[in-house]
Image 1: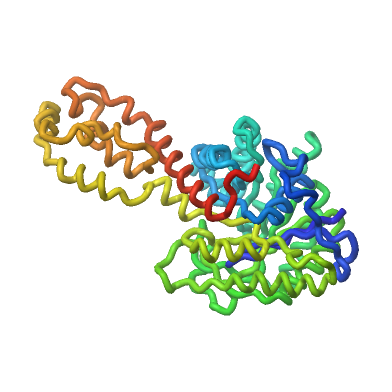
Image 2 (image 1 turned 135 degrees about the vertical axis):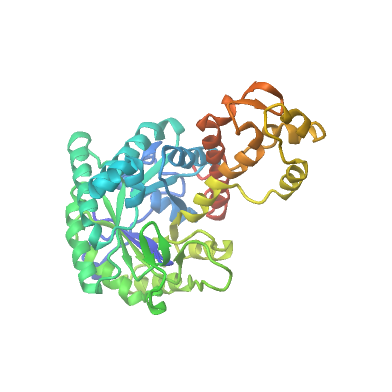
Length: 439
């Protein structure tokens, strides 16, 4: 059976439908039940289980966060958030993220090989741990431009090898971003790749229109604003062509004004009404009873208002990309004026030598002298601020000139703090996406 996912992006968004006849008379994929489908189990979700999960999200009215991970800490934070808040999660890797996972030494010498190897390594980590977290996880890769097709080809080879050995692909899905090409060329290349991917039960996400802003090597900050808004007729062209691929599963990232990154109010004009208009247009083309046949994906989700997010969900959005906000949470949880003002007032210039720690902090409140006792879930910057005077040397701190600081400068401490802050931020995202306690 053919399964079609169409992702329409705010400069990326997606849609899932499953026609069993030629596109002109396609029948939308029907979700089996309002309850979590039995095919969806803890671990990496692929093939028909993936289709079932996206159908369930659409029917129940929630979207799944898709988070760009660049480290094992980022991967684990995603799965911890899913387990803590009771929802599925999409862990995705960019080309640059794959290179970083492989190591910048290799990435600088063999960028294409490193990007494939790093993404595969990240995917294997997710596969090893997702079941232990007890949550369904979708494994995805982000924007791949035409110049980066060697990366995409390498990923498909890894999937095909894994499929031959395990009966399912390594990843759940991959994204091709050929939005800068003429529409006909974009569609033709996507059809070619989908024909190959369908044999390994992979889902393809393609981009239609352009997501503005800049993200991990993809810079569309100066793009013509007219390209930020996709028309329903263009989405139908994609749907009609890709739905003819046997066993084809695909999403379409169609621009509706969204941009990557976070910008000042007034600089971004989102038009999620495009999603509603496209649903109506394609529903009429299909001639069926389903008024929301398309499954949308929301790209450029960081910094978006809850109102825009939930209006997009009403139009059938089942996936939203998040990167900028989780990058920030890894660094800093957010404003802490109550703590920062107290700590700043207590800090004094230190004379040289360890013996000055005690006198410097003698008059400070106990919570300031022992900042590690203050609430957790802070990013790296706040961890350093709270523990600053325990991080200046290996021996000697406010508790004594001979006190060791190893437990503070152990890298696991600040990295765990970053994980906790990211888990908290993803909890807020899952709440906005109505993705809490849906398993």
